[in-house]
Image 1 (cartoon, rainbow, N blue to C red):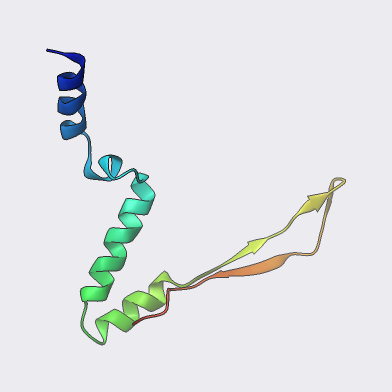
Image 2: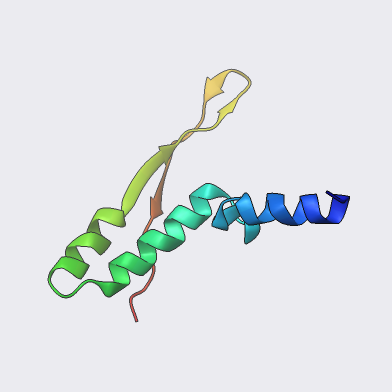
Amino acid sequence: MSGAAATSVAQAAAPYWRNAGMTYLSYANTCAAMVRNCLKEPFKTKALQREHAYYKFQPYADGAAQKAVVRESGAPASS
């Protein structure tokens, strides 16, 4: 088998997300967003609310904790 043919076979056997040049997490997030967009109300609203998250970030400087910052990771705007 030639080098080009071997590469072609290896690419065909690779996962779809890898062939698309994506990481697994970005692929999984894209698939989840597509599924959520296919839901009907009220299930769509509930699914979008579950995606919303808050997290706390507290930087350290010179071994001491600085002021904590609460960040928000919200659902994308629905169309």
